[in-house]
Length: 217
Image 1 (cartoon, helix red, strand yellow):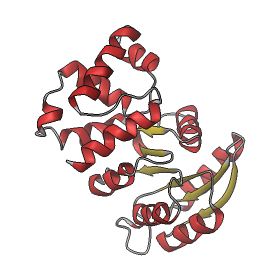
Image 2 (image 1 turned 90 degrees about the vertical axis):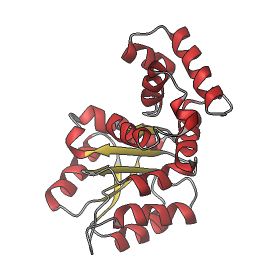
Image 3 (image 1 turned 45 degrees about the vertical axis):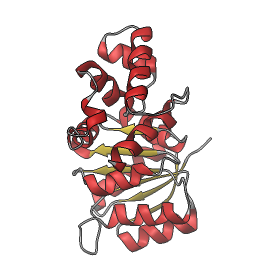
């Protein structure tokens, strides 16, 4: 089972709380660091199954967390990263999502409402999947609204794309949007056709492909 976790968070109470929460759910916390340089070193040395990373870490409290995660993934492609932040840093989020390899997640701290939601996201990313907050996806999609291929999507196709980008299966999308699975499959096929993407049965790979496409525009 994939369960070795590294935590990068500068606030002591939150960092300690994450350690105890993950341990209580069967994870092994291999490290808990509080700065960007410490994070990069730990990522490369420990090679955790998944890392929970805040965006803004010392020494400057700007974007050290994401910068360290990006550099680590350049050196170790596919290293699973779950960003846990109060902010949507669009530029670096796109870069993190764009390489299309390994598990990736981006959650907003004030929109994590219970332990089960968070633990599910950690496990999904550790297993190579995606766990994206809908608000993050909405902002990434909104900034690309003028792109001709994306503009060609119908409102319902955009709804499907947003839920798809969270890492959800067709069944989960159908339940969320009150559609049949066959309708979701039809919308998904239309999305891939309009975005010039090759359809895939692998839910995680198709989400990363869509995000990589959006990032490249």
